[in-house]
Image (cartoon, rainbow, N blue to C red; front, side, top):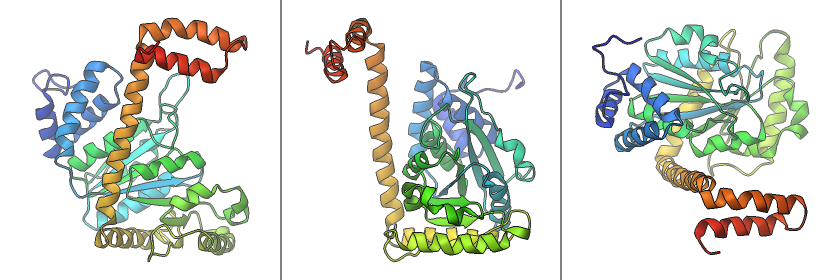
Length: 336
């Protein structure tokens, strides 16, 4: 608990919170993220005011999405990659999107506990957050959390997704680079790998390639390279690589970071990075408008009243869901 003389995020105005974040106050950053994630209306209003200030002061951070199937070793890979990033003299924020319990809504895994070495480094900020059963591999407020960590001045921001397969493609709408982590032996299962997740990957790393896994890893590397060769390039003029890595002995970690750095240089030189970030802001705007409209729609008393009778009519098959939906929308817009 904070001392009584210390101001908390609940007692400070949005400008003070934003200024503390931009000055590098880690405690205030953590509190602001909690504010952003809160469902309370008064917290949301303050969070939006903080975000407005922080968005105008965004730093030039490298935002990287780390995705892959559960068990691929994302947390171990991030800890090894994070150590390499810090060794380069850079600061690091890690946003771990944990799968949520449908009963409690809380995180199931708690990735911070699995990054023991990285979590003790003063250059690293690690924030586990529940997905709240949100689809897309991210949490419902991941984009906003990225904005706060960018305003805090972190050089590199790693976003570890839940690892749920095809729905991971949503992470592309909020990051600059997607690193797909796969296990050795996955090469002979390419038919089961969704095309969408392969198409959005900028870099593919095969993990746990030490010991007895070396041979199967080499075969998987060839299979993935062939698979990427059959897909259209994500960016004209840049070939996507498949790297062999091991968090256990450090194999391929330095090469992975070098590939990430070269990818960002490529995006900057061609103006792709700034264009992508503008597109991401537009998509975020559209998504937030949809969320707000849905919230107002469901909270409308006339809609709630009519919804029960329309649902009963749909269930009895006297009214189709299509006509029922149209009637509810007309009730909301007042065109009855």
